[in-house]
View 1 (cartoon, one colour):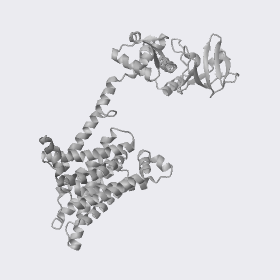
View 2 (cartoon, rainbow, N blue to C red):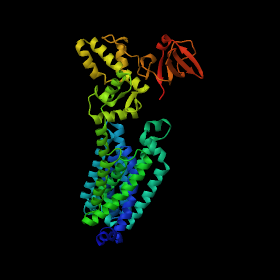
View 3 (tube, rainbow, N blue to C red):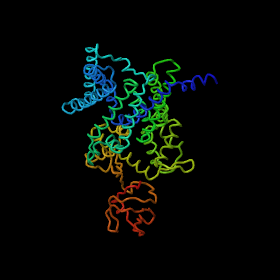
View 4 (cartoon, rainbow, N blue to C red):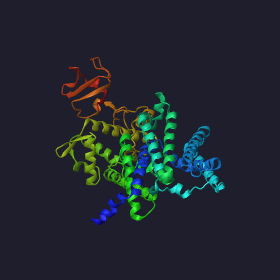
Length: 494
């Protein structure tokens, strides 16, 4: 019990720990929320660029106050200098990307390293006037946060969060679909610069407190962690804020336990937290991906099962299908489960029967096989090799491509063996007589040649009886002959 008190409760009684927790949480929350938009807009490199380029503004502000007013370490002047440096960097990045063939990511790399190098040279040349601890600038000292830093950070955080809340819909639309945003009159460039300004303010206000490395890490890592757990921006922002806070809390405890630098411990904890979510995330995690791949049934197996069930023409058991499709029992179970879930087959006791959707898919496969056989024959492939080669190619059954190949050959009605090429089309329609045992089901008429009040676009219910084909429309029934039905193509209603 005493050990638990020493590890977890005792640090909370220390003023420096509480100040670091409060100040770090302010920075972490605003960085995490803003970082969600940074990731969606693929601007992760920008935060790194701004934080490094700030050294020039800090040095210039320090030098200005020293030479003009004889004052050292004027925080306000360095803050203003940093902000100016950040905006100059952003402007130059956009300018170079706009007026040249250089892409924005390369432009960021060029300009931020140039501005950063300029800051280093400035500090080196005027070293006797500028007394800046570069190590503190890079690593920060979160355990030594000043009251001024906390106040500035709190004000900036409140302002940035207010802007994000106020213009959330615009930021969201310009992040996901800037082309659509521009088409409906939203000034995309204006909101891009507004958001960039928010990022600049965050970086400038936080670097003096937590350092370059930590501010970039807090801007990206918690948001990236949340991105693995949700597809909704609002939820992503809430989770990112939570992960930002836990990064600060866990990192500070780690720093106390290991007697290490606060910034490094926070980023270490944040990174470990990200890796844990990367492994365990229920949808996008490595474990979930491994389980999906482990249970995944190859598309070729699915198609072979559908084809064999269609060929059987009746309800069949999984064991019966296994006689035609040689796969492991577990793969067969997963395949039949998939077919049932997707509506291609339905269980009837211990047996499975193809649905109309499954029969249509089987026709597509049969058409693909026979079109490929015809094409291979046309290309001079020996007849004894046609079936085997077409069996491989039939799984490349993009419907538009099959229709294109079929059309290029003049739409032959039969394959080289005289078998009919099923009339099923890329738009999902098919000839009604091509599907065996068509059930009593509503369909959409795509085309038909009859004078019995049935036309394209009608939603009808068709039943095949001994007397012919009964078509029910708006409570009335018309009986079509086999010749009329052969002119009809229909599409299943989803």
